[in-house]
Amino acid sequence: MLSPVPYVKTIGPTASPFTHYWRIIATLANGKTEVFWGHTATLAEAKRKRLALDDAARQRGWRDHRFEIVALEASDTPPE
Image (cartoon, rainbow, N blue to C red; front, side, top):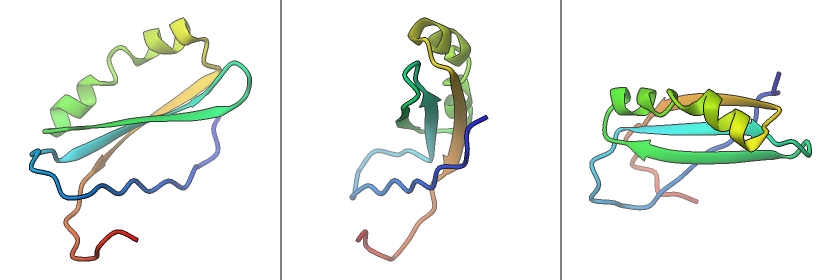
């Protein structure tokens, strides 16, 4: 099982109407951890990203992986 990885993704202004981030935290065959992320316009679209994940993990030889979906929140605070 993977330990929790504190990770915050900040993006700049965009005209793209997306609402959710998806993130894969994978333990590679060599023991290193890699993070893959993207964004989607809806929660349903983000959930569909998970459908092929087990297959992808087998093809890439990942030891372990975790898939997370996070809703975007509006903020008046500029990124640091």
